[in-house]
Structure formats: C-alpha cells, structure tokens
Amino acid sequence: MTGTITATATGGSATSSTGSASAEADAYGVDDDINGDLVGTVTATAMGGSATSASSLAYADAYAEGLDDDVDGLLSGQILVRATGGIAVGNYADAGADANGVYGIYSNVTGAITVTAIGGTATASGSSAYADAEAYGTDDYIGGDVPGIITATATGGSATSADRAYADAEVYAAYYGVDGDVSGTITVTAIGGTAIGSASRAYADADAYGTYDDIGGNVSGTITATATGGSATTSNSTAYARADAYAADYGADGDVSGTLKATATGGKAHSVNGSAYADAEAYGADDDINGSVSGTISATATGGTASGNYARAGADAYGAYYIGSNVTGSITAYAQGGTANSSNSSA
Image 1 (spheres, one colour):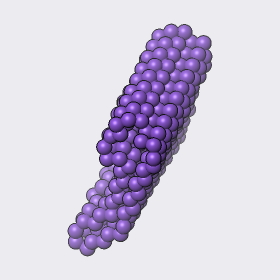
Image 2 (cartoon, helix red, strand yellow; image 1 turned 90 degrees about the horizontal axis):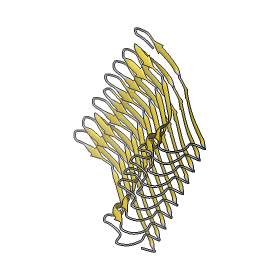
Image 3 (tube, one colour; image 1 turned 120 degrees about the vertical axis):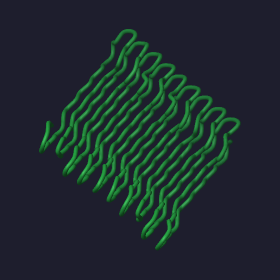
Image 4 (cartoon, helix red, strand yellow; image 1 turned 90 degrees about the vertical axis):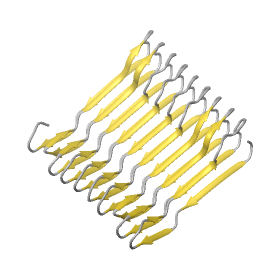
C-alpha cells in the first residue's frame, strides 16, 4: 500500500428525555489486514459528540483504529490515530477514548506509528461515569525489528458521578512485545484525568508500558515510559491516583546498549470517609535482561498526595529484575515518597 487512507468520524448531538442518547464516533482506516508492505499513510481520527439523557444512558465515546488487523509485511510508512471523547450527561455516562494503531505487524517497523487518546467529559447522576483513555501502538506483536518510531499517549478526561468515576489513562506501545531488535525510539505517556465519585470509587490512575511483552532481541535504541497520576476525589469510598511506568515490562532476550527510562509520579487522591492511594512505581525492566547492559537503565518514582481515613503515597523504583551478563553501563533507581495524611489509620 503506497497511497493515503484517511478516515474521520465526528459524533453529533443527541438528547433524550426518557431513553438513551448516543453521539459516539468510530473511525477505521482499514477494517481488515494489508497483504503486503505499508509504505503510505493511514490516518484515523474520531471525536465523540454531545449526548444528554435525562434518566438513562449517555454515550459520547470515541474509538479510532488505523488497521483492525495485521500488516503482513513491512511498515515503512505512517499510521496516525487519534481518539477524543466528547461530552456525555446521563444516569450513566461514557465519554471515553480508545485509540489503536494496528493489530499486529509481521515484519519490521521502519516508519512511524503515532497514537493519541484523550478522554472527554462524563457526568452521571446515578451510575458510573467514564472519561478514561486507552492508547495502543500495536494491540498484538511486532514480528521483526523496530528501527522506526512508535509514540503512544493517553490522557484521562473528566468524570463526575454519584457512583463510580473513571478518568484513568493506559498506554502501550507494543502490547505483545517485539520479536526482534529495538534500535529506534519508543515513547509512551499516560496522564490521569480528574475523577469525582460520591457514593463509590474514583479512578485517575496512569499506566504506561513501552513493551508489555518481551523484546526478543537487543535494545540499542531508546524506550521511554512516563506515567503521571491524575486527581481522584470521593466521599464514601476509595480514591485512586496511582502511576505505574514500565519501559520494558518483560525485559529483553538480548543486550541493552541503548536506553530504558521509566518515570512515574503519583497524583492527588482524597477520600472523605474512605481510603486514598497516590502511589508511584517505575520499572526499567520488570523481568530478565538475558544479555549485557552497556547502555543506560533508569527508573524514577515519586509518590503523590493522598488524604483519607487511610492514605498511601508510596514510591517504588526498580532498574531491572535480573541481568544475565556483564554490566558496563549505568543502572539507576530512585524512589521518593509523597505526602500521605490519614485521619483514622496508618499513613
């Protein structure tokens, strides 16, 4: 495929006094696979609209996907995907955003994959509110090397509910890992949004994974994972504004001469009558690196601010779980606890 494919979907405006209201948007660049190389550009953009229901369900979520199946060959072109949630108001409200670059790639990634998901604004009067964001560079494996660029970003929106509220962010560059070498650049960023829940839990977590499964070869490039918790507030339950960052979650089978960098910063969690968590965890590699390390591995975790009956704002940082050969490079792990104020229990 050497040309250009562009798909754009924008939700409209829906209002209902008795039933559900839907202003969703779904965009697919290619709804099946590409039986060869992708040399051109595939763009998919979805933006949720405005949905209001007086007593029922309201949907203004957005879903965008470059390819809903595999690229059977090489990816030397570009995949650009963006999903933005809209505005949903109802008894139950969904203004979440999901963005997926491509399901899988059989060969090398020499081009670029850029994926962005941004949660919208959800307000629910009786049930759950969703303004979460999920972004995937690849939803399956990469069968070759990555000398190219993969960038994935997820940002939670604003969720307010009389029950549960979700404004968390989750991002993966390569969900099932990379079979070959990573000599290019992989960057993932997750930023939690704002969640306010009255009767139940509020979530504004951020989770960022460079590679979720293992890397089958060497890492001579750069993998950077950054997670920042958002703001979660609840009256009668638990508030979560945690952050977890993994550069290479399942490690690498070969050598690391490049850079693995993970940075996690807890957000702000407050519960009037329950628990609050604003922890941070950062991992350069949470599993084995079977070769040597001549490059740089760094993990930095900083706890956020938590207040409640029970409050926790801890920090954990891990450079690598196990290294099978020599270390001539640099491995740094730094953890700084945050601020926890507990009214009736330990902090």
